[in-house]
Amino acid sequence: MGDGDGGAYAIGSVIATLSLQSSQKGSIATIFLVVMIALGLPILDTTLAILRRGLRGVPLFRGDASHIHHRLLDLGHSTRHTVILLYLLCLTLSLAGLIVFWTQGHALPIVPAALFIGSISLARYLGMGTDLSNVRKQVAQASEWRGTVRRSHRLSEYLLSELPHCRDETEFWKLFDHAAERLGFVADGSTREATKVVSVQTQGNPALSLRYLDDLQSQQNWWGMADCLYPAFAAAMLQWFPQESAHTQF
Image 1 (cartoon, rainbow, N blue to C red):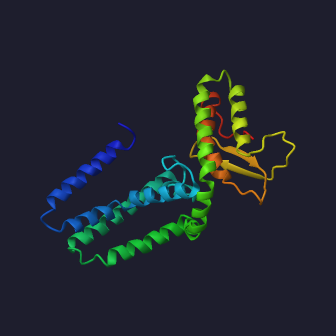
Image 2: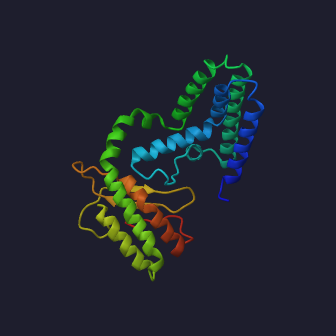
């Protein structure tokens, strides 16, 4: 059983049981809406993750560190405080769903409006307001960058497949450097001047920093390409440098 499966099965069982018990007390549509409201936090987080990864042009099933709890941690909240906030949010949503059920749908115009306002406020607090205001621009950029991101992802898969066959870290980093250079990143010692740095890091893992030319005539999704290379980088660091907290390959 994978991480989270136990909780998912428990939630599913509770929802199914409550739906059967309450099927004679209200319409099916009302019961379904109550469930959707009560599960608002995971639904919202999943929806935002799909939109975020789609706009960035990275694979939808690739993990990242931009979920709601990650953003709360980045804002300075402790792990304990973050968990409490998420519990309170889930409790609030559950109560909102029960209010809709108890009033037989009479509170339906009020609850969704309040939830919408709350979602906008939460997005602004988490720093998502700028992302939402530039959706059209990000969609256009994502369509242009999709091919490059796919290529970066294939290079990362190649590096991961070659990692077990490398005799030492030097052999692997040569492959990694070559893959990064093919994507346009600038290696140390290059005669070309690199004026920008992009960094990728997940919670508790080492950071990867890559340098690239600041060429306004050739805009690239540098973050997306670096993010695609990160799994290979993290796997190599774990194998050869498990104690390292940060590393700059380029």
